[in-house]
Amino acid sequence: MNHLYDRYNKPLFILENSSGFMDTLEPDGTIHDPYRVDFLRAHIQAMMAAVIQDGVDVIGYTMWGPIDIISSSTSEMTKRYGFIYVDQDDYGNGSKKRYIKDSYYWYRDLIASNGANL
Image (cartoon, rainbow, N blue to C red; front, side, top):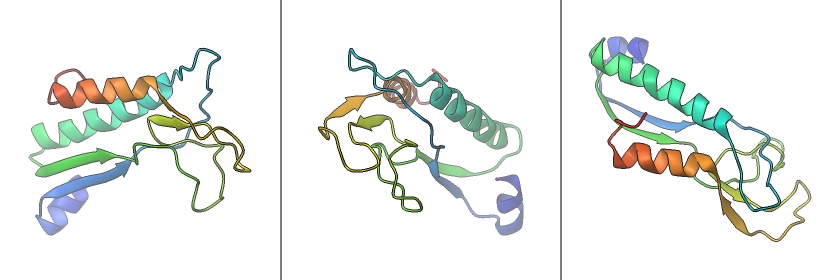
């Protein structure tokens, strides 16, 4: 962020920040993904430090797509990127039902608090 801002001196909008993880749908329909929350928290903290400490002008932030999608590079669902789980495997089998992951609630609360609940 610092490099881009120093070089171009233009406001930045961070898009599609996340990583793929192997999420597990629990028998009760929950998905506990603290690793995704930890990943996002660390990146948002770094972004906030660039803004507050270094004066980088950031006008927006979004995490990766909100819903699990088929990977464009591997055509798989094994790695999941969103905070809404889709019941589908690598072969298209499954109910396609959606389940909200723990990270969804964390991200919702982060947005509602304007970053205070990081």
